[in-house]
Length: 115
Length: 114
Image (cartoon, rainbow over all chains, first blue to last red; front, side):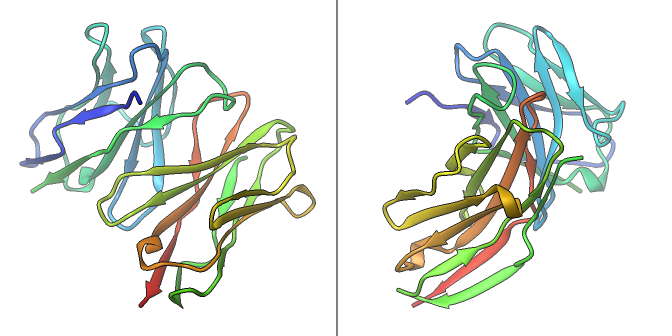
């Protein structure tokens, strides 16, 4: 069964550094998402991406964040200057079509630790 | 606005007992989708079920069952004859048809005691 993959599984970085989290969505999917889960808390929507542009973003997704689909397979989340509060699990997801009628497939997550 | 409430923060039951996890949602849309995800200690999100707002039939999948009641805006999840492997955090979630994002509840941490 096709799956969403994410690398790395765990990233440790120092405050102020830039990080790029990588995702490979399912190959025929058109809609891509990032979610964040601070330890012990709920999963929160960050951004959705379709047709090479952001379709929606949350209040969390400020100017420090950016997303890109640099090629036909990868989908990346960049945090420009990490803060301690960016420490969280980041989940990538993809689905075939827009709207809630299509199932979103989640990747296994990247645990980001900012020290 | 969308909202999902899971009032039970943490539940502990002894193995083989039945347990119900509550979920109440809010939405202005008439078309929406409800989900349950399991998050084991390893951290990944495991999809359990998705229901659309037009299908109020209860669903059973092995030891799992779901009760969807639009009249009370609830989508409760029952595990029958619980097992230690069911120990996890369970998230209820909602997506409206007009957009893609999934809104999660705060989760219920379930401990199944041997």
